[in-house]
Picture (cartoon, rainbow, N blue to C red):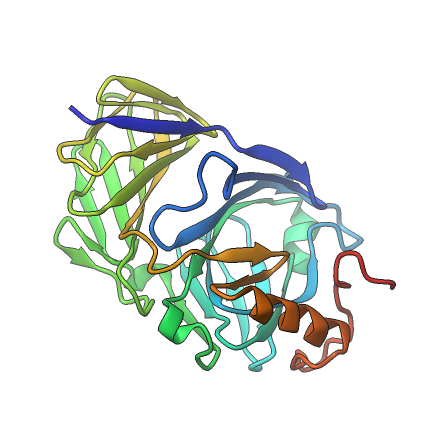
Length: 291
């Protein structure tokens, strides 16, 4: 039987649309390299306006991984990347020594009133790679490996499990999988990871007898034979990885193993020393700074 560690319910906030934040919390700081988990939406946007758009902002020391269930975003960054993010695709942005990006709701999504919903994760880069060159990788849904089982569809977004390996090039061990289960279907959580978690985006499951409802993240201790059974038609995520190689400090959009590096990043954004996104002039001000 699985030794249950913790259930995290997260906190909802409105940033132009509803976001539920599951990581980090006071009770749980990470699952392996995963240090940030936001469930975005579901949200519908008006035909006019900028509600839901995230203006240019910086990152250091981390990778972002965006995966949508519905709708679309337009990603632009200071490398010159311009990518439409659509459901089922994996979008990995490696910030390294510093990158700036924006995410905006496409005009046609606003015009049709379509639903936008998805997950954004932050992953701490290994300490040795915190200052690497920034990069952006888009992997279409068709290129992500998928497993069909009775009552279940599983997509491996990052890492390797169930005999499937994702092509998403994150430079450290980690597992991120999305599963859709019909009521009554069962799924085993992969073994061999020091830290594991299951997030129920919709529906409900039991995990070795422990109930998990929609919007809840269940954390598992490192042991074997964790078995999920869907109580309803369910969409869930599985996250896993080794223990972090060092403690991480988080401040606004910055992540580092060194406090002084975060202080430098704050000064650099305030002084406009980060690279710009081609064609974009807006920017989110540093929290606490004078606009």
